[in-house]
Image (cartoon, rainbow, N blue to C red):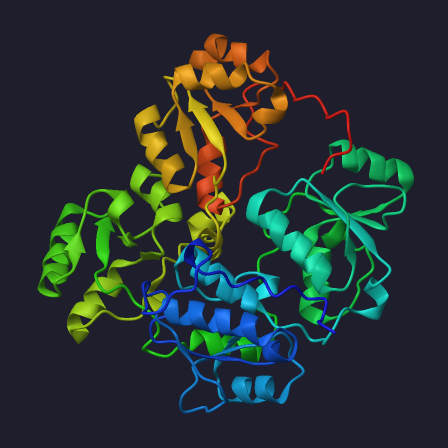
Length: 457
């Protein structure tokens, strides 16, 4: 039988399997698929291999430490897994492979489903659990549902009295209220994450599982399987790199800017002043400039000037991961870390599927804010489009919001009267820094949308 862990589905572009390396996402990666062939059909595995090759990766059919750089496996129970970790290979799952080829960006594992499980099939303690989910949207909701299946529990779209657990990220909503009334165990996604990572069912009353709305509840802790994490810190030098990096500066003194510009030109690197074209942002510290805020969603790498200086000295571009911006003082005061936020941004766009209308006097202004939102995958509507959307039935505009300010309060009121949530600009700025949208704070008005009359899904 197939194990309860869902493989994550490795998909080809437009549903077609093509060869020839159309994309460079996995260039330099020599990949072995371990244990998945024991559970999936040959046709399925062949399609996965074709997708790997389509993204410039190489498929190795047997474990040879001299050839293999990455091992894709479901569990930590196999001999191949043990040898791969011993040999300091990059070990991960098909969920990671799917996320990488879907985003067309190479990144290290960043959520629990990217780590092989310590068990072969679903845990006996979980097989009778019926678990529902509320408050999660987009990619986060998919991850939660897949973790439920990974532990061997049953996922239900609606909540009933038969449900044993409710995974929630907020203490409000129809499902939450019903769960409280019925005595359902209500916990956050960290409870699921810990089961997936450690193979042990923890008691649901622990404080770390009962605090709802923690943006870090699904972030992969560095403490998990230290040896496995060490393998990823030693990614081979031939791992995928940009063939032509495009560099952007922000927050640098003019003399430093000129010096770095000359170094990059000598290395034949392209420079830009448009964040939408950039692959690398160079800065000394966290600054709330439009370039920095947009780059959190747009640029795979935000690095310090040392990356340019030492690359110039060595006459080739060095590994960016050793030069990522590490601004502990500002990270502590703002409540996020650049490294974790960039990892989230590589998995999914923070505003994917979200529509926003920006009123005239917000700061930064609507033109700059549009760049920040669109780099984050969101859509900015014109006033005419926003009014049309506001007049549509509530169920058709679930992801439509207005961002306004006190100067535009009277104008924004027309949207609030239609039960559309009005946020301040901080709603956007905080979201792009953390790469996580907090729908519960930074509201301009206290008006809430009415709870749905039927069971939430």
